[in-house]
Length: 322
Image (cartoon, rainbow, N blue to C red):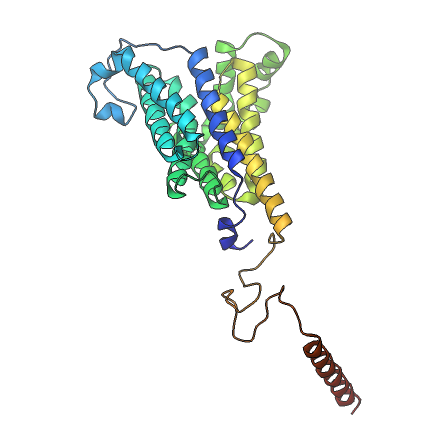
């Protein structure tokens, strides 16, 4: 596929709205299922960027959290309206950024839950502003979304390697989690009692996470990588109750982007097009005397061209016989 095709066949606006609304719903589910908690523990190492700049008292004030919710939901609503998309996108990202920082400063678990939703909406907001409010975004935007999501997973895999090394994949962590958090059932009992199965599963997760920025970045490997990461989240959600609604929805959306862009290219006939023009030279420009594919042909000119073609064929035949 030509690189310039990334700017062709834009993904329809309805899909952008679907993704933005889906991510916002996943964030709201997270906020509802895990209500606001304010920690009284000392915050010696701030985990959010805003936390490095804002006073510590900001993260103990519930009204700040409410302000973030209002800005986020209001921005999402404006994002859906024609002529207000850019303003709404910026407002939604600011609101979600405030929510992420507030929750991270009080609950470490929230850092993992809302990181990918914030990343995706930030990329889509920037693209919406670049497209002057249009939600019909070119294919390169969704490639950028996939790369940003993959980078988040790669950071997670890299952190595991830095802190624990390849030994993280030996399955011990999974078996400890199952003993501590999972309900007793035949599957968890089997995983705890079968170290090699846990080791294979965790090693696979480590490899997929560490290479996710490449796997999700390329369309050829995006679907298997997204499905592998989705399976990882669903299994952990089933076994120990780790809720990652945003990540799960985003991975499904990435699979959908491949299907949409492929269908668009097949319909437009550009799926295997090389980086050459349709009607002219290698740069696609029409040269003097070139004819576009849909230009009408004069009957007399057509007969003349046919005669030249026939005479040329007979001359070639005589040369071969001679």
